[in-house]
Amino acid sequence: MADLAKTPVTIVTGFLGAGKTTLIRHLMAHAGGRRLAVLVNEFGTLGVDGELLKACADENCPAENIVELANGCICCTVADDFLPTIEKLLALPRRPDHILIETSGLALPKPLLKAFDWPDIRSRVTIDGVIALADAEAVALGRFAPDIAASVDSEHETPLSEVFEDQIACADLVLLSKPDLAGEAGVAAARALIAAEAPRTLPVLTLADGVIDPRVVLGLDAAAEDDIAARPSHHDGDDDHEHDDFASTVIDLGEVTDPEALAEAIAGLARDRRILRVKGHVAVAGKPMRLLVQAVGARVRMQFDRPWHGPRLSRLVVIAERGDLDEAAIRRRLGV
Image (cartoon, rainbow, N blue to C red; front, side, top):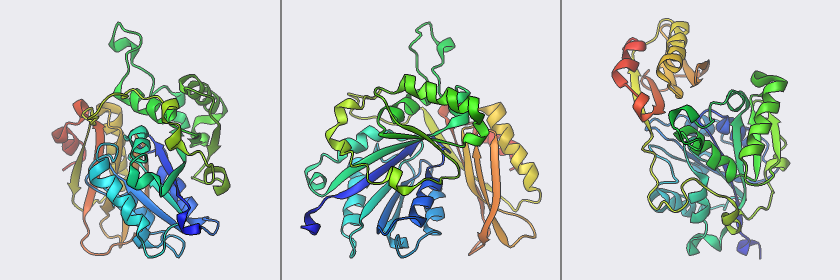
């Protein structure tokens, strides 16, 4: 009977930089005896999160159980990418006890839920839960609020607000990340905004650095594939949803002599050119270690993560709304 049991799947969604990879790394390290598999999706062509997760591979989640899909959102490529990947994970010599899916920060979770209704999949897997991460500070500051000033229609939504609201509407649990940056008042404001946006009452918890008891997020038994109608989307009825509002580019840099100047340039891109996300790896002159760069808006974090293996290539992926992505201006700002 064990072989006939459905494999539970947890979908981890949330906007760019909300902390999805950090949460999954924590769950991998505290699997509670489960053998895990992970599917991680990147919007840009340069994969960063998959490599970070593979660096944490162990006997509970070996490297071959971690699959990365880059250059797009799996909500748009269900038949071509998502379903074959799930089939591949289910066909591993040792079938995983639980599958974690990290969506792109721009992905809509509802199309994935619909994919689990496909006959070849439905009898073998179940959606244990949809976890939505939300950056408490960003939510409190209204970065995902509708741009009312942009239209006489007070219901006008921005691309950012639509993605955020769709992710919240699909969730079984919302995790507010980075509460230290938001402070008590910010966390309270974020909770109130999420309660106003959610189509039903949702549990909202805070977590710092991805640390949470796995029993809180795994084993929800939500069977979300049977509850799709209760999870509304701005894109209901759209057969061919695409992320035309967003774009990415990869910037190749030479060796960097001043990481602090690079961090300031990246922060400037967010302030002056509305860049949403920057991430990648940089070679620093005279340093044998690789510098990991992670930026969400004007918040830039850098740390040396490991020695270089192979060519010392400095590459950053930059994501923004399409109208804000001026590659020439980005290159000038970064000194390329």
